[in-house]
Length: 182
Image 1 (cartoon, one colour):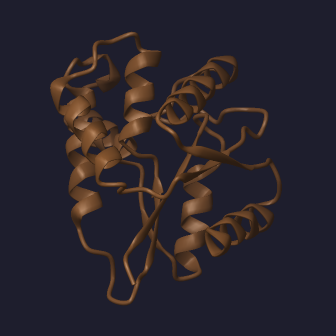
Image 2: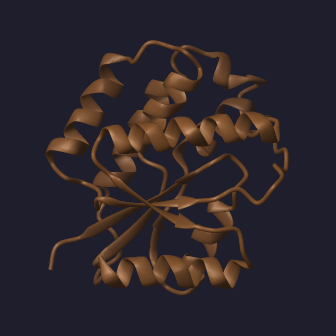
């Protein structure tokens, strides 16, 4: 059986990381958010706002690719990703920056190779955003960012499946149901 890769996307602060952690605790193969890790590494090096750097997107794309091509644990036939290169494309659009050649090539590759399942799990906002060192966005701006993600995925032929605001256990159940029916 071939590996099926599902993407979680949505507004910053919508609960994707907690959802991914809950799936991991239940034994699912999960891939964490690359941008958060890139930002944290840059901040540890003394860069206060790495998202202002022009090379941030390429750093995120490189880490996403590295994680995507790393084989999952033996026996895993499903992986759940916290975002994908299409999310990075949405970030680029949201920031009104040009699409780098690396990002363009990676988006083309994942589309042509059908790397991700056509159903993308859209984790809906909880009604607030908890600020973190890597997340400094107002709730209203997070909703705009979510709309950009929705547009990017639809433009590229993906179907968005809502994961509504709810208790974490209910959100996990929605994700598992979508994956089981795909």
